[in-house]
Amino acid sequence: MLPPVLTIDGPSGSGKGTIVQLVAQKLGWHMLDSGALYRLVAFGSQNNQLSLNNEDDIADYASNLDVEFKLFNVKPVAEKGQHSQELRIILEGNVVGVELRTEATGNAASKVAAMPKVRQALFQRQRDFRQNPGLVADGRDMGTTIFPDAKVKVFLTASAEERAQRRYKQLKDKGISGNLAALLRDINERDERDSQRSASPLKPAEDAVIIDTSDLSIEQVVEQVLAICKKGFDV
Image (tube, rainbow, N blue to C red; front, side, top):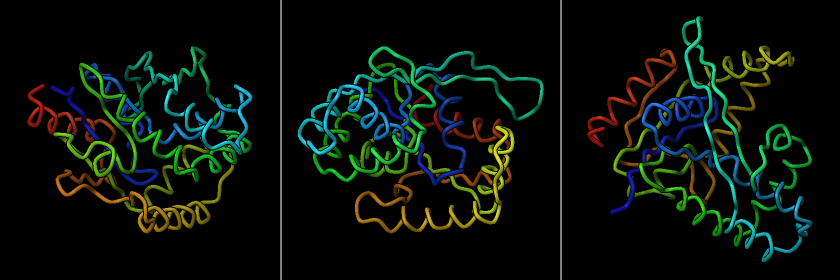
């Protein structure tokens, strides 16, 4: 019998990354941040001196990608709605972080993401994260394409305005300046691009539970997701 999977899909800024980490910690399950995988493939390929022009070599590397997502020090802090937690991405035994967010890695990731053989390799690699006691998978097509047989599927959403505000606050908290109007425009453009693409467009699975997080706290969303899990998985 396959291990259980909880899929949490949704657009950028819907809160799925934070929710996935907290729910995985509370359930004691593994987690998958699918959005990081193409950057990891690009970064790791370059570290291993693989040519980004060799699709076969990159696909082979992707199919055997040695990566773990580990949560540490997950605990609430004094301010309501805020959590102290650390997600470590471990590639080939080494923790990687800011390296994945550089412009060079982003450009390389865009290149490898266009390779059909790499996409197929990562399709299977994502499925390989399905291990006991269970998996919480974060992405845009986890419930529709990668784990269509998942027993419990959640789709998080929020208004574009709310998601722009969240992104603006994140940047401000990191000491980075941002333009709210530009962030809102970027989110709307990304939503349209993600929902209109031919391969695995962003949309809720037919059997997904949709949660609008616009007016909910982190705790409220986690409580709702855990309640859905309890009903669906009897956990």
